[in-house]
Amino acid sequence: MRYALALLAVLAAQPAAAAHWNVDAAKSRLGFTVSWSGQPYNATFRSWKANIDFDPNDLAHSSADVTIDVASETSDDAETDEGVKGAQGFQAAQFATARFQTASIAHKSGNDYVAQGKLTIRGVTKPVTLPFALIIAGNSAHMTGATQVSRMDFGVGQGGDFSKPAPVAYQVTIKIDLTATK
Image (tube, rainbow, N blue to C red; front, side, top):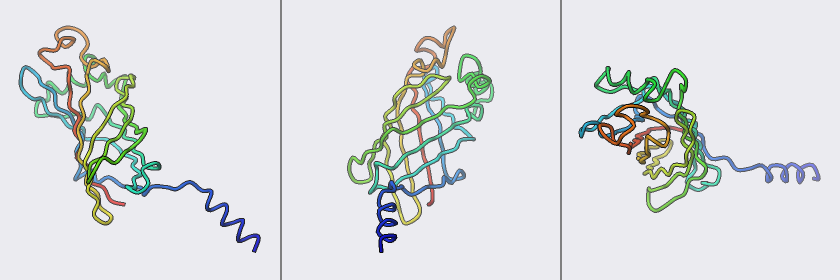
């Protein structure tokens, strides 16, 4: 009897764990849009990993940690892609990855949530707020979200014309469309 009570006490003391979700890369997109010479420049990352633990009933134990291979950036303009990955852009040779880590996730209403976290690009870490919509149906989830950051906060676009808000705007919209299963 004492053993059973001791085991129950140990189990009760274990922290709760939110469900782990596996991203379906074929159905998911992570990218950004920035105004370049007055036109939208849309790019995606072909290689990124997301470690997601989420339970809408246990947001205190929910988290996301996303690592992005910045050299995997691609758009419809291969020449511009090389510049975006180069020294004035992501500087992928020195800073191979960008990373987003949540600090907290809060429910707003309905399917709307907001994640507070830290985004690291080019070795610079800044706080970021990411509002997102999430639909969970059984063991499947679909999340869409977007947030804006200033590329200059992360040192992206240094030197020459790129240090000015034209031809490339300072504000960059990060877009996420993610499908996952648990």
